[in-house]
Image (cartoon, rainbow, N blue to C red):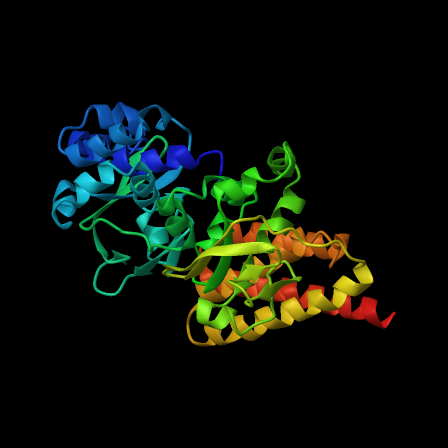
Length: 399
């Protein structure tokens, strides 16, 4: 998904423009009326009634990306849908390409999901990483939008028309992007495939290094990390704590266990320090947690596997203790997000919390989840993998 993220943003917008220009007989490339469906770009060029979306795509500079193969499923708001937004909202979005891009990606689901497939789902993960809830009682609703027309096929995807613009939650990723001072962190999270996890329900507490903090690292360090994804994941998950810890909570602690498995030291004797990093801005609120801005990148310590294995078991147990009640309360997607973040932390651990076979187990589970839109199935897939790793590490400790 990372390689196609720009294309996905564009698809989420301009593909809507095809509606007015698509003749009824050309809605399906398989219908046999003498021509195949046009791709999203060609159909958009022929359109004329979706000026808001076309303008948005041009403002984001995304037109040339729309000929990618896909397939993609686009939830396409009409001009009337955009007109429902508060006054000056569109103007503000056109001046904020990052936020605009996030909103457009929220209207795209990777793959070709037809109406017959949609009605079998309770949620669908978008190109933004956040999931949309789907309701099929009394018509079909995606998020808070009604689906008013379905199964308009193009050569590289399918479009379902909706009557409301979908606005994604202002999660940790979007909050960091809006701040404008975390470009390196966001790029690292994307490279490490952690963006989607931090857009989950959480909640999470993130100690977020600024661009200036990354610039303090020795020359070439960031580039080296981008070529060593396991180490990069270890460092990034070392900046994340499960749960929402406000500044008033942090100052009462001497340490906090991270999703990487190791704990960070907390010193509130003179200001607040996390290890050697100073907290320069606390309690930056997001819908799924809180960010505390720090002035240095936190680096986990290396340690022996024998010392790390008990921490792996503790981390898994903590994840299950948090995730199981979420699942039982009907929040399967939130449960899955907790399990995914734990698995990524274990895989990224630089101090060898788990062995090669356990890594294969977790990697296979993560790949299976990314291919599925069934939140309940995904939660169980991750739970079984974590249970297997827990049992394996327990056997190792008893040997």
